[in-house]
Length: 172
View (tube, one colour):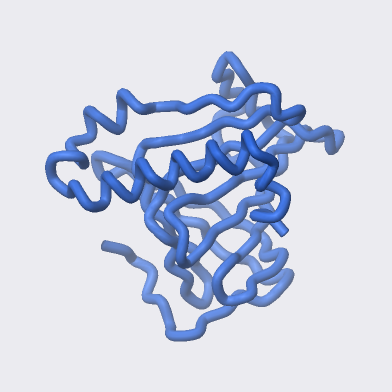
Protein backbone atom coordinates (compact mmCIF):
# COMPACT_ATOMS: atom_id res chain seq x y z
CA UNK A 1 0.00 0.00 0.00
CA UNK A 2 2.91 2.35 0.64
CA UNK A 3 6.44 2.98 -0.48
CA UNK A 4 7.22 3.90 3.14
CA UNK A 5 8.55 1.04 5.24
CA UNK A 6 7.62 1.89 8.81
CA UNK A 7 10.16 0.87 11.39
CA UNK A 8 8.85 -0.20 14.79
CA UNK A 9 9.18 2.77 17.10
CA UNK A 10 10.36 5.16 14.37
CA UNK A 11 10.26 8.68 15.76
CA UNK A 12 11.21 11.69 13.67
CA UNK A 13 13.82 14.06 15.07
CA UNK A 14 13.17 17.83 15.29
CA UNK A 15 14.67 19.85 12.43
CA UNK A 16 15.11 16.77 10.23
CA UNK A 17 13.73 16.94 6.70
CA UNK A 18 11.18 14.33 5.65
CA UNK A 19 9.25 13.74 2.47
CA UNK A 20 5.50 13.89 2.98
CA UNK A 21 3.76 11.47 0.63
CA UNK A 22 0.01 11.82 0.18
CA UNK A 23 -1.60 9.04 -1.83
CA UNK A 24 -4.68 10.33 -3.63
CA UNK A 25 -7.38 8.53 -5.59
CA UNK A 26 -6.75 7.14 -9.07
CA UNK A 27 -3.09 6.44 -8.30
CA UNK A 28 -2.15 10.10 -7.94
CA UNK A 29 0.50 11.04 -5.42
CA UNK A 30 1.66 14.34 -3.93
CA UNK A 31 5.21 14.52 -2.52
CA UNK A 32 6.94 17.45 -0.87
CA UNK A 33 9.69 18.15 1.68
CA UNK A 34 8.85 19.24 5.22
CA UNK A 35 10.79 20.05 8.37
CA UNK A 36 9.99 18.08 11.52
CA UNK A 37 8.78 20.24 14.39
CA UNK A 38 8.16 17.41 16.86
CA UNK A 39 7.15 13.75 17.08
CA UNK A 40 6.14 11.84 20.21
CA UNK A 41 5.79 8.49 18.42
CA UNK A 42 2.03 8.94 17.86
CA UNK A 43 1.58 12.58 16.82
CA UNK A 44 4.08 14.01 14.32
CA UNK A 45 4.15 17.71 13.41
CA UNK A 46 5.94 19.02 10.32
CA UNK A 47 6.14 22.41 8.64
CA UNK A 48 6.18 22.98 4.89
CA UNK A 49 5.60 25.80 2.43
CA UNK A 50 2.57 25.55 0.13
CA UNK A 51 3.59 23.00 -2.49
CA UNK A 52 0.77 23.46 -4.99
CA UNK A 53 0.22 25.86 -7.87
CA UNK A 54 1.05 29.56 -7.28
CA UNK A 55 -2.59 30.21 -6.32
CA UNK A 56 -5.39 27.78 -5.52
CA UNK A 57 -8.66 29.54 -4.77
CA UNK A 58 -11.27 27.36 -3.08
CA UNK A 59 -13.75 30.22 -2.73
CA UNK A 60 -13.60 30.12 1.06
CA UNK A 61 -9.77 30.38 1.24
CA UNK A 62 -6.83 30.95 -1.11
CA UNK A 63 -3.65 28.93 -0.80
CA UNK A 64 -0.73 30.71 -2.45
CA UNK A 65 3.02 30.95 -2.70
CA UNK A 66 4.46 31.97 0.66
CA UNK A 67 1.79 30.21 2.72
CA UNK A 68 3.16 27.95 5.45
CA UNK A 69 1.45 24.76 6.58
CA UNK A 70 2.02 23.28 10.03
CA UNK A 71 0.80 19.74 9.52
CA UNK A 72 -0.32 17.35 12.25
CA UNK A 73 -0.30 13.61 11.56
CA UNK A 74 -1.27 10.75 13.84
CA UNK A 75 -0.36 7.11 13.65
CA UNK A 76 -3.61 6.18 15.43
CA UNK A 77 -6.17 8.63 14.00
CA UNK A 78 -7.93 8.68 10.67
CA UNK A 79 -7.18 12.31 9.82
CA UNK A 80 -4.52 14.99 9.53
CA UNK A 81 -4.86 18.69 10.33
CA UNK A 82 -2.98 21.43 8.49
CA UNK A 83 -2.78 24.88 10.06
CA UNK A 84 -2.46 27.40 7.23
CA UNK A 85 -0.73 30.77 7.66
CA UNK A 86 -0.09 33.46 5.09
CA UNK A 87 3.40 34.77 4.29
CA UNK A 88 3.13 37.38 7.06
CA UNK A 89 2.11 34.79 9.64
CA UNK A 90 -1.63 35.57 9.74
CA UNK A 91 -3.71 32.48 10.43
CA UNK A 92 -5.99 31.57 7.50
CA UNK A 93 -7.49 28.48 9.14
CA UNK A 94 -7.20 24.70 9.28
CA UNK A 95 -7.58 22.29 6.39
CA UNK A 96 -8.31 18.80 7.65
CA UNK A 97 -7.92 15.68 5.53
CA UNK A 98 -9.60 12.41 6.41
CA UNK A 99 -6.85 9.84 5.84
CA UNK A 100 -5.72 6.44 6.94
CA UNK A 101 -3.37 6.68 9.95
CA UNK A 102 0.07 7.97 9.01
CA UNK A 103 2.96 5.61 8.34
CA UNK A 104 6.31 6.99 9.43
CA UNK A 105 9.69 5.80 8.23
CA UNK A 106 13.13 7.26 8.81
CA UNK A 107 12.74 10.03 6.21
CA UNK A 108 9.15 9.65 4.96
CA UNK A 109 5.71 10.40 6.36
CA UNK A 110 2.96 8.75 4.32
CA UNK A 111 -0.83 9.09 4.38
CA UNK A 112 -3.69 7.92 2.18
CA UNK A 113 -6.37 10.51 1.37
CA UNK A 114 -9.93 9.20 1.77
CA UNK A 115 -11.52 12.17 -0.07
CA UNK A 116 -13.39 13.72 2.87
CA UNK A 117 -12.16 17.11 4.13
CA UNK A 118 -13.08 19.80 6.63
CA UNK A 119 -12.22 23.50 6.55
CA UNK A 120 -12.20 25.57 9.74
CA UNK A 121 -11.77 29.34 9.34
CA UNK A 122 -9.32 31.22 11.55
CA UNK A 123 -12.12 32.74 13.64
CA UNK A 124 -13.90 29.34 13.66
CA UNK A 125 -17.09 30.93 12.34
CA UNK A 126 -17.02 28.66 9.28
CA UNK A 127 -16.75 24.88 9.63
CA UNK A 128 -17.25 23.37 6.18
CA UNK A 129 -17.55 19.70 5.29
CA UNK A 130 -15.96 19.21 1.86
CA UNK A 131 -15.82 16.65 -0.93
CA UNK A 132 -18.58 14.34 0.32
CA UNK A 133 -19.61 13.90 -3.34
CA UNK A 134 -16.06 12.81 -4.27
CA UNK A 135 -16.09 10.35 -1.37
CA UNK A 136 -19.39 8.86 -2.52
CA UNK A 137 -18.06 8.61 -6.09
CA UNK A 138 -14.72 7.09 -5.06
CA UNK A 139 -16.18 3.61 -4.73
CA UNK A 140 -14.72 3.28 -1.23
CA UNK A 141 -18.12 2.90 0.50
CA UNK A 142 -18.79 -0.15 -1.68
CA UNK A 143 -15.29 -1.64 -1.91
CA UNK A 144 -14.19 -1.03 1.70
CA UNK A 145 -17.28 -0.39 3.85
CA UNK A 146 -15.36 -0.64 7.14
CA UNK A 147 -12.79 1.93 5.97
CA UNK A 148 -15.57 4.18 4.67
CA UNK A 149 -17.27 3.99 8.07
CA UNK A 150 -14.03 4.97 9.82
CA UNK A 151 -13.65 7.87 7.39
CA UNK A 152 -17.15 9.16 8.11
CA UNK A 153 -16.60 8.86 11.87
CA UNK A 154 -13.28 10.74 11.55
CA UNK A 155 -15.00 13.60 9.70
CA UNK A 156 -17.71 13.72 12.37
CA UNK A 157 -15.04 13.80 15.10
CA UNK A 158 -13.15 16.64 13.40
CA UNK A 159 -16.34 18.65 12.98
CA UNK A 160 -17.31 18.09 16.61
CA UNK A 161 -13.85 19.16 17.84
CA UNK A 162 -13.94 22.28 15.66
CA UNK A 163 -17.42 23.31 16.77
CA UNK A 164 -17.03 22.46 20.47
CA UNK A 165 -13.56 23.96 21.03
CA UNK A 166 -11.51 20.75 21.22
CA UNK A 167 -9.19 21.70 18.37
CA UNK A 168 -6.59 23.39 20.55
CA UNK A 169 -6.12 20.33 22.79
CA UNK A 170 -5.94 18.09 19.72
CA UNK A 171 -3.08 20.10 18.22
CA UNK A 172 -1.02 20.49 21.44
